[in-house]
Length: 297
Image (tube, rainbow, N blue to C red; front, top):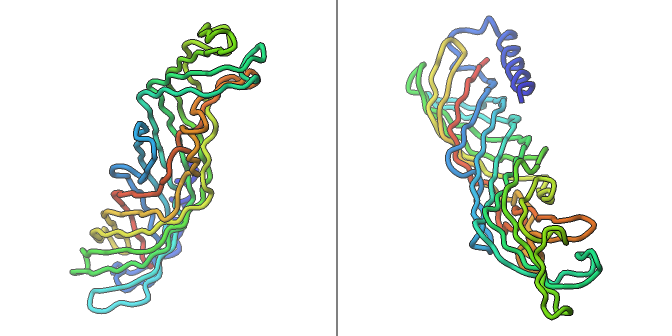
């Protein structure tokens, strides 16, 4: 992340060096380079799940650099096209307060090869997932300047993105399990030394990695205020909205219904499915405060 920031800053300063003799009034300049950062406001994802007991919250921050070309201007108004490269960081947390279920455990879930009914009680289950994207925003920019120093702007366009990282950041939760053996007159066993019965805590290594769609497409829009700092250097402050058109996570409706959320085999021990797979919808719905520096030349 620090390396990416260094490259963006270097690119920004390089453009300034190439145009060090630019005139103080840059309002007629055709080209621009913009370094910007976005701080998320509220939830970053719009998510739905058939299971009402699953709650979620998320956040998103990003930074990047955009290059623009102004192709029309008249009476303080201008219209330009912009394209850039963004680095987006999303943090999503899924949690379940409590959950009970049971399923038919096969011979591979018993040290002696018996079949039985396995029962689970989950509590305070939480999984935190970190995502990273490289995005390429392409948008139109309309600006109206009241004078040389101050103006307002509006943006609209698209933001295709490519997932570069998706991982479980943290896992917590308590598990209690026991087995009922019909062949032994419904004998109940919850001894911890047998088949991982009894009380235990989930760990990161027990959770299946989240399945994430490699490509994402969003619509973006924004508006704000622009002010001249000095010469060709301007600053903007505004609000952006990113509306996702595609799902972030791959969905599996069987998780939590026919597929147990936590299960056990002798070979692998206890394994937990990623809670993200329970989402029937997981699209970006992201408001953010956008702060930028623009160099025009």
